[in-house]
Length: 48
Image (cartoon, rainbow, N blue to C red; front, side, top):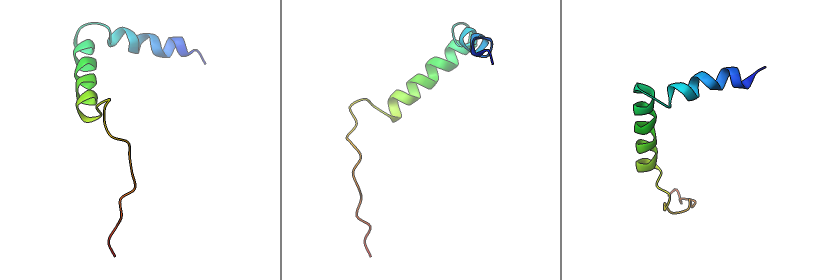
């Protein structure tokens, strides 16, 4: 299986034109919803 043949079109699409706009938008949403300085996860007590 040639991964380069699979990845090359995806990389080319996300490097220019509407693909770049969509990629930048996806990165923006990822950075908004999952900030780098977010607190670590901790267990939540469920009341009984």
